[in-house]
Image (tube, rainbow, N blue to C red; front, side):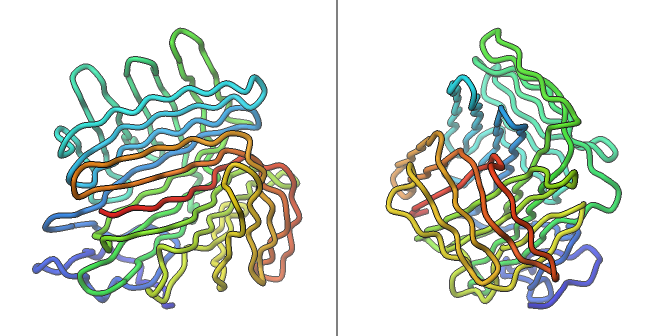
Length: 323
């Protein structure tokens, strides 16, 4: 897998096919996601968490439909809140072609937005249940995983995985206020733009936390990159991104119990605390997404380091789709 030249490149050629010069990965986002045609998949998925609360906010456009998604879990009180706003054909959705561009969705009085002001990302929502105002700060020269997945020249995906970003702000859920303080709160961002195969399956795991005072996170995936020659597996440590070489295996019976993630570099156990399920069935689009919220413990090896960790809060996904 090659590392890309650090200058902006367009994801697509004029005919809509993959620009072969973009294949590979880099530590900073420079791709312009100029997708063309139909069956495009575009999403911004943010997670903001401390040791007690986990909040996710997403804007998703899959051409046939669009969704604004918000969910919040309190692991002490075992309370969960969710709101999903569905919009046919993603009307009034605006998703940026560049990672650090502004994105938004609107349906009537409901609004969700991700905006960038200097080195900060501002996450806002005003819906029936949620009032959100969160600021995510980007440390200077912070690294991320920016990856092109090339199934073929007509089916491909660009993803930017950004973990361990300091955040602060507050969320009002039906009159109850939850505050996030920058000393113990970290955000992660999953930016995706692509044109996918019709049938898709994936497992995905992500967390951001602290280990011995340093910011520490992972991004691990299985399934959706199969046959492409690349993987999305990496470690985030002290504002640096370290690419992992091997494929990982997700071993489990049901996602609502225990998941083991293994490779020569990874030995992790995930214990589920709460599981949410989201289903879509719109003629040509059928999707079943399960997201487990819980804790990660285990060992990761990278760059002559071996880190053992325990009880870091995060998310695992299982997604089956025809889209």
